[in-house]
Structure formats: C-alpha cells, structure tokens
Length: 108
Image (cartoon, rainbow, N blue to C red):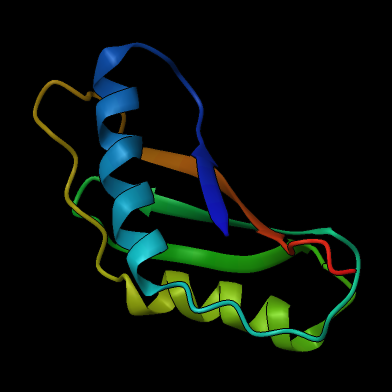
C-alpha cells in the first residue's frame, strides 16, 4: 500500500514538506477493502495551511469500494494537524491531492 502527495509550486522546500506529510499519513493508513483488482486507487484532496491545519478534505476519486475510500479519508483525519510549513516554504496554503494505492498480490 502506498500513498503520494502532490501540491502546487515546486522546489526542494516543497518536496521536503511533502515527504513529512507522506510519512505521517502513511503511518495512519490501514487499508480496508474487499478483494478486487490488483491495484486499487483512492484520490483525496485537501487544503493545508501554514500551521498544518487542514480544510476541505474530500474524496476526489473513489476506488469503488466504500471501505477503502473511508480508510483513506480516515488516514488523513488521524494525521491532523499536519506538520507546520518550514520557514523557507513561503506559500500561505497548499492544495494537495493524495493518492492511495492498494496493490494486492496475485494468487494462484
């Protein structure tokens, strides 16, 4: 199971911050879902402010499995607040999309 965050802007400051966010969210993701396709994706989006507070968390793309979608949203909620922005990151907020990917091993 993997997740990735992407935001607006660029550079090392943003990449460093996204790595922190990714680690925190991944630590809280316990994917729950019915067996399905080998790779199942959930996409959530949210706005994070300099303080690490998050607003407007919502499901952008459903996996088609309500349990898996709920587990992705829960992982973000359990990670709040996110780390505050480092001083060298000058944006007032970031609009992030976070992609959760559940990869199931093949059986047979």
